[in-house]
Length: 266
Image 1: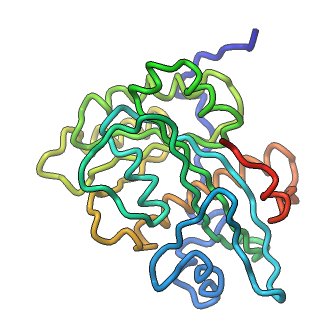
Image 2 (image 1 turned 30 degrees about the vertical axis):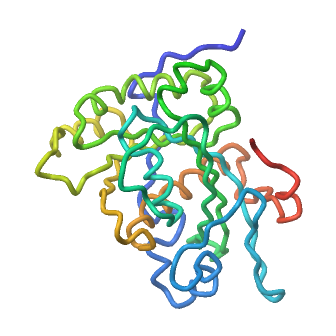
Image 3 (image 1 turned 180 degrees about the horizontal axis):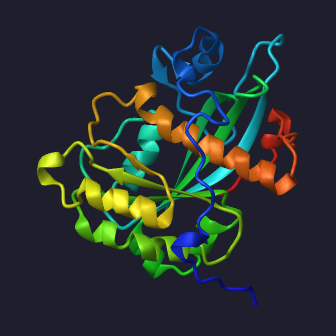
């Protein structure tokens, strides 16, 4: 029987300083254009399927690292919208309940600060509707199987979703495996309807030691790299640091494109 953990706030993993591992705002630099052009098409984000991979010119060597990300949160907080935003896809104007598991592939290039090495992070985002999770017992274990990070969501317009964060974190940490944990507050731009104060968010960060990111609900500019860069860079930093700690080395095994095509999570 697997060992169960009781998660306390002080058990949270180390929070890294922004830009301590990857170059912050690298997407604004001239030397990044060759790499970011691979995730864009006609100035919009490309939509990648499960078997698609980044193709670079023969004279450019770049490795791709693969991670599974589970998006957790109660119904209506914007899990599907966040996945679409991070991938640069169209965000639905109307809310609908996700009926099962949906996966979204996000490619994101980063430059390591110390070595100057460029990596493509392939993030497979897993999103499952709350009602589906309650109806079918096998869905949550499937979402958490071999997961590398969990994004815990709450909505600034839904007080209950914020109060439920501690329960979310406990459920997400039951396996006690190495998992990066970040918190995302959605609908931050709807400040006239907010049910969660900045003081409460600050207090949560102090108690739990988890970074909290704020995402708006505007659906008009989903291809804005600057809006998603802070969250994706932070996710990449913590995932890379987690692997470095696990191997006690900065030289990590990476999956080649040919290897990636043979392993598909469904």
